[in-house]
Image 1 (cartoon, rainbow, N blue to C red):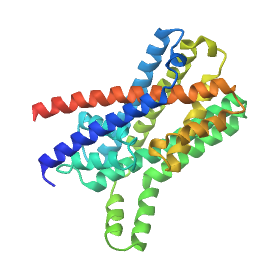
Image 2: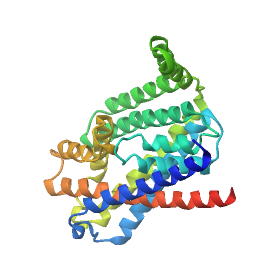
Image 3: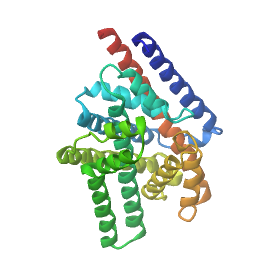
Length: 307
């Protein structure tokens, strides 16, 4: 496929992702008055911190991609932000398709696929460990149990990213035939980098700190929920999001995430609080991602003019 065709296909995918996310946002808000905060300034601050938290994921993507081949942070931001919004499109693959098409002259398909796999695995493991640890802390679990969960998470991450994943890919490639085997062999060519993994973990921790601050500010924005433990609900919402992603039933786990959250939080909060968080969480995250996507549009235009 020629470069001009790929250019326009990239534009079409970006527009489709933005349009579909906007549609999901509008169809989620059935009663807008329920989402009006009592203290607007806290909601603005919370949204700012949420945006910063999501931007740390851009840095994580950049670090994982740079392990394969050096790229600019601007290119990583463009790839990640657009790719994240495109995950809402039916089919789940359009974000990776966009990234492969945009970088076909500079980055190989295995590099893009491996970067996304590494990012997904790290976030699934890391978010699960942090969420369970937070729930345990809020529930009064023994400190040793929480420490054991964290150490187990670190051990799994170390195994996966310091050679374990590569060995597993090579073993699988030796069993499977043809092109699949060659693709798996190519995916296993990434280099283990302990120092870079520590840097990734540091940015991941910073992102979680910003995310928790944002959720805690929501309690200030809605005084009627001032007594609600938003840190605990944040952890439960994260687990519900992981269930939605792993289920692979709907794009980005939408619907499944909300249903899982209602079940997980059923014994820890009142029904009206659970319903509010389920709706608010989707609207809040989608809104911020749409604005970040618009920023990616601006970046796309500026980079296009320079080229």
